Image 1: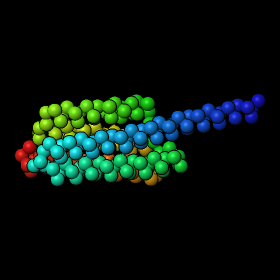
Image 2 (image 1 turned 180 degrees about the vertical axis):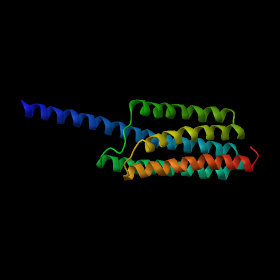
Image 3 (image 1 turned 120 degrees about the vertical axis):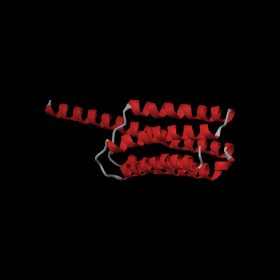
Image 4 (image 1 turned 90 degrees about the horizontal axis):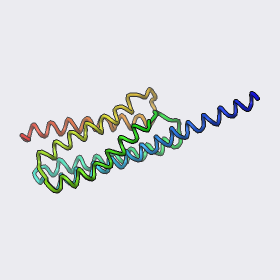
Length: 172
């Protein structure tokens, strides 16, 4: 009977680990979508605001790079332990943000404005940066995936700083 309980406990633990890993992989997949959506948004700003085209182009390409980093993070995650946990709520928030982004892009295209582009970018960088920040700061592990999230967090914060500085330097 003791062996039966021990086997049952192992099966339950394996199922819990599978769910955690699935949530992490789903979260990372949504993270890739998010970075690409933000890249598309910045590309829309690039076309709508010719006076700021280089600025928006650079940010758009950096977001594509973020997506690549997350994609590589998925590979690390498939072969290692879980560096952090992702709740269903975390995953749902990212999914909802990804659902909203195409609508934000389309709305912007209908009524583009330089000021609105910067307002949207700041709000977005704050929300995306916050998502990465929460994942990194709740983990005490120092594995490759956490390093990727720390880099993303630094880059997102850097984007916010760069956007604010650009706005200040260009009286926006």
